[in-house]
Length: 154
Image (cartoon, rainbow, N blue to C red; front, side, top):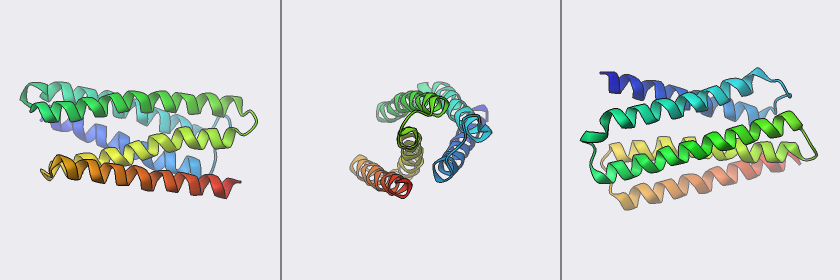
């Protein structure tokens, strides 16, 4: 029960980060925009609850599942790093800050979407090759969407 609650809070946090992050790159924020704080807070919450959910189930996980979830946790840490880089860019707002901001937030959006896709396909007991294929396809699609957003900005 506790493990399921951790997963639900993790998934809701990730969904909030995905929705608010998408809104941020669609309508770029001002320096002290509260939407960005919601996005960053959701990223932090997503990572904390993901790690807690993994730890509570670690003993029951197969080695392949441990590897996948460990990789997702490392990705989550890097996503948080990129979120804080976006915060620095937003605060400084130097020349060309918009593109850098979109790159940082866009990376986290692609990763969040990929996380949802990987876990969903994994939960369907799909073969590893299919999970990897779908994950790569999601990244390629995400990169093209971010490029189009940056092109609209230019």
